[in-house]
Image (cartoon, rainbow, N blue to C red; front, top):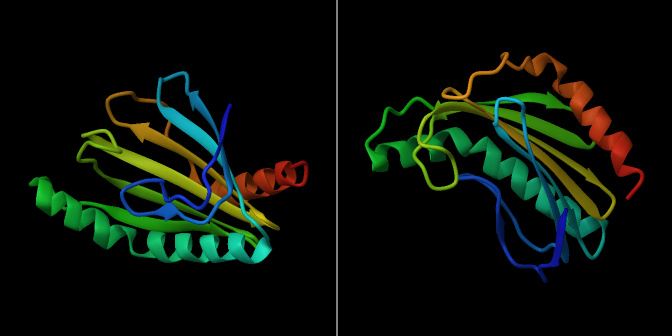
Length: 160
């Protein structure tokens, strides 16, 4: 796991969203058996209000992600096929799924589904992300379990 002081610096999460205002950022990367990337990130803030503001901005960014992704696809000359769906909402968390043809850069330049989970507890914003890349097939993920994923992240968060 890597950890660094970020002193409010903007941290880009994907083509749609970023986190600003954190004091520290911890990140742990993973690879699935199919070699698809995943990662957990913990952002610590000066207080619960700052973490809540970052979470609210993330909600707004992800609500606009389908439009932003399609605009990026249009600029790159690929099919404008991005769809973004909120897959679960709990008292302190939200998850999304984005299926699209990526354009390279942050995302792989291929058909994929990106999953993002965000949870705010006190002065900490916890994110978990993983990708399903078409060129690295694995059993399809069922987003019906996303409320359970958010609950598991919340249970882990009480240990921070």
